Image (cartoon, rainbow, N blue to C red; front, side, top):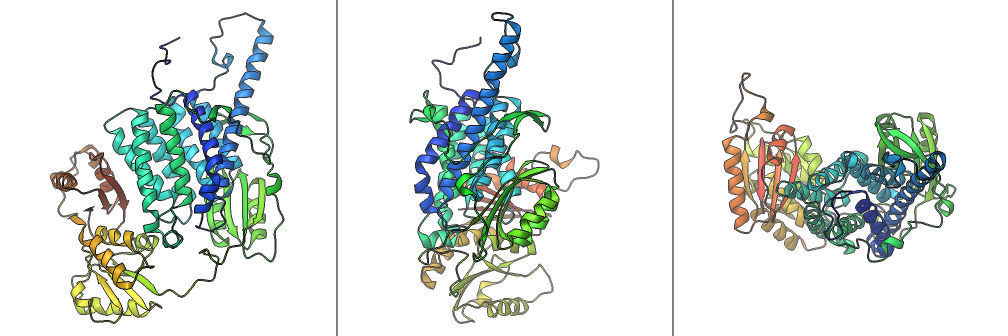
Length: 577
């Protein structure tokens, strides 16, 4: 019974809408896989990101279809046992429809069990985040926000060495925009629209964050796949046919996949479907090639300690992704030249299934790759940072770093000597030095040949400069763009001494409103955005202040990025571009 939805658009993701979205994603990824493949230059330019995402989504839909068939069989058996027309059919298992949670769990398990490639494992974690949020029922705007936040958390945990300018960057922007939108609306379609828009903009910026993309003239392939998922989500929420481009006829089948029977089980106290048999990969199965420099090893593993397995695998290769399904099961992806050690160690630690070993595709000499012999670096960016935590952060953004910790007794000459020694160790012809407000640019500028100084006044300004760094340009052009970006960033810094200290008798900090200093700074941010600012970067020195800053209202017309960098030199830094 209930209110008919025939004449209204679905503005929450119920089971039917979720299933339509999954089929639409499988159809569109299959249709666009070659386009996405052509973007694939990182981490290995093997032109398979689109194919892997399409395969993984098809595996998810196949698992969903099997769950639906199992429900129909159960219903038929119940009718046969009770006699036709007996009872009102009020028991939930008498219906053929899966709940939203059951459908989401089936998709997540199907994707995790059938994930292909690192992009497939990432996709499985997106669906896992969705399944966690769907446990309470249909997803409204707040639930969509939670789903993206959960997905970001799972993907960050899965990728051992995350790199900015990839799908994780695009996902972070989508989650931040969804959080902002959910503050003012409970509409799933409105939140999905905000997430899609932010993801599309973040995707456009990926070449400025990852040099290999910039050299190839492409955006990140995995990020493009994520945008496809969000585009389809917005479309099914704002159209009645949902999958009008052939999605309803799409059965999710791929010739070399055999999704076997799924039976009811309990995962984390929730009803789900797990495979009784193994997935077979058909033509994907191959034998290790001892002459290959690296192999791609993938497997599903259960009944093991995730952290122990992760620690074991880290030194054995790269592109490691541990895509967890539960606390004790995961889909593993790794590139390695020690496949034997990986496989034997996995079998020693848990129950392994769906093992595949493949030789990575031969890399064309005309395409950049981390597997090719690197050309001598002509230019480096050296960022001056206040701590090892900040060094790790700027390192992920593509900079070399030199740490100069706060020291009241340190002279400018001493700081210059530290920087000079760091520059001399750079085995390059040209150096762009980003000062980040730690050293006086006038003390360095002009004192060393082939060193150009970017006088960034803060870490926020330094990050803005890093975002436009382009080593393919001349030194002067590259440095000029970085200087403009740094100077175009207005920075506000709040020290711990600036902020209100709490006494032991007062409520916990989580219960208090933000201190006046924070509110005044945030008002200034709003004023700068009204004058044309578009990007807000917030760096917090600890999780508490990060939580406080993320709780503040956000503009629908701006993009926000929140980072926690311990010992960053302040409680909070805010940059507006």
